[in-house]
Length: 321
Image 1 (cartoon, rainbow, N blue to C red):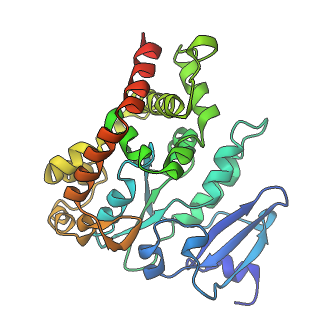
Image 2 (image 1 turned 180 degrees about the horizontal axis):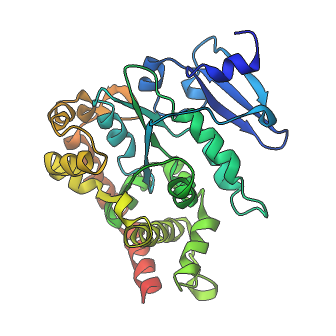
């Protein structure tokens, strides 16, 4: 690999890290197995001796992706999106990319005076190049980046999207098992507060969230309203609402819905149902963690954090009133 142009022509290299302040992007080589194993396309996915280079954004030119299809998985966080992404990997034509790190920087810059529309579309063109034998890409986007859903569907290169969430009580119980999960859920607080204001729900003064739990509940409500609007708006035919609890309770039915929405071979549902991912912790496949383990953990969390969960539910009830 001699020149930047050569590197950009090779689909093994992905835009991996963005430095907007200095106008550059780090492109890193990841083969098909490395992409399949990665739960996150961030430093945790780097091999021991990564191959790559920092390139000036000014030299990027969107590659020709032909008729390659790229779909997106958007979610509220901690609601089974990594499992769903791994299940889609069981279709041989699908290459899953989980949470490319530059999308976080683009989402954070989206409300700037000049949103990075062109850069988003250009980077998406590079992510849309799957490695054989895959012929299409399914990109799972970080939960704090849902501000990008409409731009990605409008002109950012996504064909269809799945909008994944779950009911408030089990979601709060899931978060409360880990302080890191609570902090993660608060990452997009300001943007989600703006979503509520756009839907006529003021969260100032006495209606402001009083603590982290109420702030998490606020974020859940904002994403529910965002997903509802998407499912009934301009892109209604291109988005599919999925409840993670339904996916666990009726996996065959829900996977069939998802396959039909993404125009995947219906015969692939049987392979997805047989995937070992159902019995592994999705973000660390070396750990056993199945549906029964999750149900047990959630039952304990709802007992331990019952008062906190009730406070979050009460905040949503007040906000909706």
